[in-house]
Image (cartoon, rainbow, N blue to C red; front, top):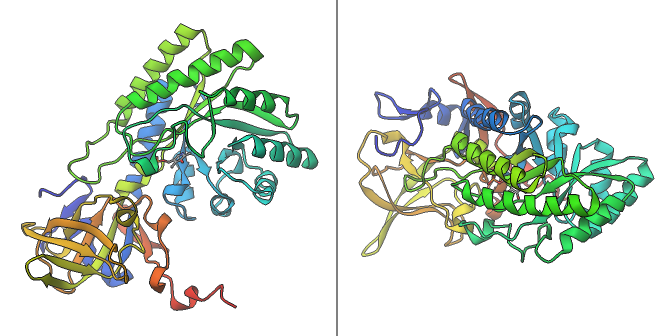
Length: 434
Ligand SMILES: *Cc1c(COP(=O)(O)O)cnc(C)c1O
């Protein structure tokens, strides 16, 4: 069938979508809708694309770090850990989640543009492996806190390389004018490194930069490597500091619709590695260990959201709306970025997708849409609607606007589904209210 983007999605004899061997009707009957469905087998496959390519092409000690911001909940961490990845956390809340799930603290990298003194203390006390220091203020605060605790904290310095990769403005973070990191171009990154080398309680191990998300090709990463190498070689000459690590930030893009390419992760990592090795030869800089922080490309295409259709509303002379029992509260990405998704009628997955409609959520908000003017098989009230590639930045960005409760999540492995996040109750909604 045309809309089949992944090999683990099939259609059974009754015409229903089957995810990782489980019929969507069984999922909906057992767990209700809306429901986040995460295919664990697929998550593991995605992890292995990075671990195997990075082991093959980069120096020993290189590794992928799972960017928890894409999908952070306890159940993901044992999977990530058993696949041999480290993890990056962008807040103490993410660190806490990873740690209570048993993830080793020394394999955590602690991000964040504004770590408070409490955040810093929490990170130090938890034994987090590396801080990714964002700025001079944080550097001073971390040095002081670490000193008080008698800790010498390993760290990377976040620098901005001044690149503008071809992605959405809202998810482009590598350009000079940005609130993330310290720019190389203005000379400030040099002062940042000098201060870090002078800080007694900080052990600087390298540089981090993140150029953006949903990047489909290696060329932007190669440009990033060039700028980092130029800077690192300069710093080696001036201060005798040899960066052990280059952390290249977020991973590759994913295929949300058929218009997006399928990214060859192995091939792209090989190209980055060839570029890096040539650059090291040219500049005389010793080959650094490489870290990457894929989030989206680990979990996105392992996720499917299942909704139940409320029905069709025809606005005569305009268009047809299909309403679902979720929407921007479980997937705010269309409202935020007009992000496109592949949608199908999972109850009639074998029928032609010839009904043009707009999928609307249940909030009192005209922007509450999942997709506009797309084609699916004409649904009836009660049909299951599936939105594909929702594993990243959906649950992570979900909210209780309009007091809509957050959906449950199941993880599928070896043809079996298990509940990993229970559905919120009305009591959960008022649980913090005194
Ligand atoms: C967002 C982000 C990531 C993850 O990006 P993906 O596109 O999900 O791979 C990694 N590192 C940093 C610093 C980020 O801000």
